[in-house]
Length: 254
Image (cartoon, rainbow, N blue to C red; front, side):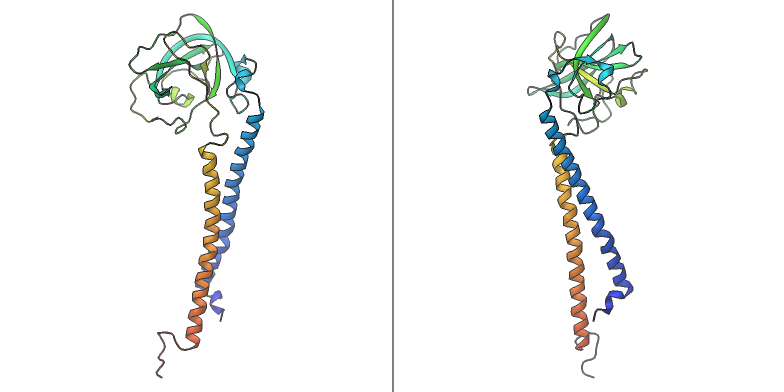
């Protein structure tokens, strides 16, 4: 009765099932592992002191930015150069822009410094002249989709969609640090920009997306098994009907 299992048609079905189920289980386990890693990261972050309360350190000692150094106060010395505005940034429920000025350091690279926030329609103050030392919370470069605002092309000259070395390298002729700081004390005419949590860490929306994907992959595995048994039962019933001469293709009157 089960000889149909060795037909070429069923060989293909069985091969698909044998391959699909381990793949679904592997992917589900991998997504679950990513969620558990984020939970562990969040628990570790909860146990760590507030980065803002840790001792201020020179910029070079805190690079590259990671979960341990994100939010730490860094210091750097140099001269302000090119200045940009980063529009569509909300602060205290108001629309405005970040004022981003590049600090040309002795290390040869420029450090993007958010000197503060300005409301839409207000004048952007010029940066201080001469050598300055800035102190601010260290942040990792933003990535596309991480800011929640439009980061596409078409922005007027002097504006940037996001704060990153990848976007700045196209508009300035010198190297830029793959990090930025938001100063603790904003320049006159600007409001200070609070530091944000490190991207892609903790129990954010992406973490729960990982958990949702985990459930989806396990559902896919169960669906494959369900469909195999459904096809199997239908084939068995068809074989029984044929054995009883009930198949529509048989001449039962003969």
